[in-house]
Amino acid sequence: MAFQERVFSGVQPSGNLHLGNYLGAIKRFVELQDRYSCIYCVVDLHAITVWQDPAELPRAIREVAAAFIACGIDPQQHIVFNQSQVAEHAELAWVFNCVARLGWLNRMTQFKEKAGKDRENASVGLYAYPTLMAADILVYRATHVPVGEDQKQHLELSRDIAQKFNNDFAGSIRDKGFGDAFFPLPEPLITGEATRVMSLRDGTKKMSKSDASDYSRINLTDDADAIAQKIRKAKTDPDPLPSEPKGLEHRPEADNLVGIYAALADSSRAAVLAQYGNAQFSTFKTALVDLAVAKLGPITTEMQRLLRNPLAIDAILADGAARAQKLAHETMKAVKDIVGFVRR
Image (cartoon, rainbow, N blue to C red):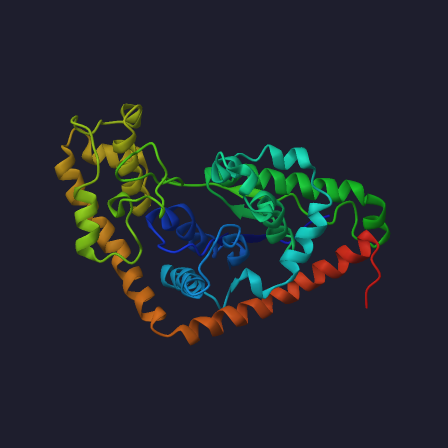
């Protein structure tokens, strides 16, 4: 059957949104609004797979919502909400826990990375995170998901779960009038430059809020002076910029800065190097400072304005949750019928 094209994606409210979140996710979300019906979620259920301070979590949730809106997502034309307000996410996740295979979850590299050596003390939620992610997407029967490289494996698992559900319940799906498949197999949307933004202090590590050095990242709440200082102090190497992308190989810090410039300018690495090839980093960094301040300054200002009125943000989230819940409820009604549950 043909599925209505719909985009779903989410961002964790883990605090200190940074340039990597913007270029790797939120900027993509904004660009997709003109082509798809979009659902963008603050995934607070995912956040609590590791300890979150209950006094800080509401602020972090509102910060992500403010970033969505400040970056240009329209919460009236599309849906913006926080995950915990729509119970069907967790409900479908349990069904998927019973569809997914243990061996599939054992292969998830992100759990191994996050749990580390003390795996026995990791939460069950952290281990089962990918089945909730599959439920997030499929409770809306979304067809497309903008993902970074580190989430591709989870999206593949979502496709595997959707396929297995469709196969396991094929007869019931047909009997209930849903054709050959109830769930779509969601496709990844990975486009443009700098989908994976690296640390300003180490070009081999992803930009992260958990890095001890604040100079490793540009926060979306940084002012112009902070942005300028961090870019000027960003690690580089002694050689000038190459004139073509091949010259960035084995130069992770140079590659990262060129990728950031390209993504902010809606350009390509090749175009950036055509302009700045053979230039010293001091010259290039000055240009990057000007570009970053011009692009990020208005976002910071608007986020600060929105965060001064938390009740207005809460109203946007509540409205989005009500609209999302209508879609999710219809999916869960059908899932219960397909699985064979007795319902009201």
